[in-house]
Length: 135
Image (cartoon, rainbow, N blue to C red):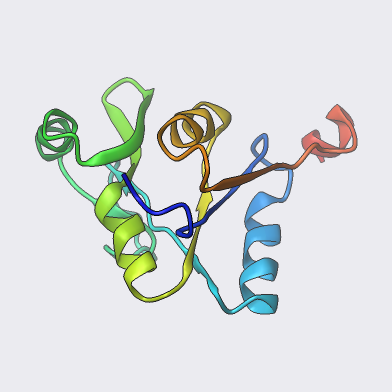
């Protein structure tokens, strides 16, 4: 178990509610915060870099890491498309003396909270309305 002094900040919201913008703003204002790069099995897009945007891996690699208990949280978001937070990514950021910021869904946030109950601050960004989300 990690030290309760090793904090985690989780930003979660429905898609389109602005969590990525909020996350980037917080990291600019508070340099101690550092983005936690998620693992994903989806194809890398042209402008994305492995280890920067995501830790891209095959479905077999991802499943192997699940069985090895290397994830703090993971979900199959779409059929055969997995996303998750590697424990090694959290440790990497803590070893730099920083606080990991996770931009994840509500289910993932609950899994992290269960594993690190004294370490987590989670912020749910509620959009002003359904119309605002559509816009």
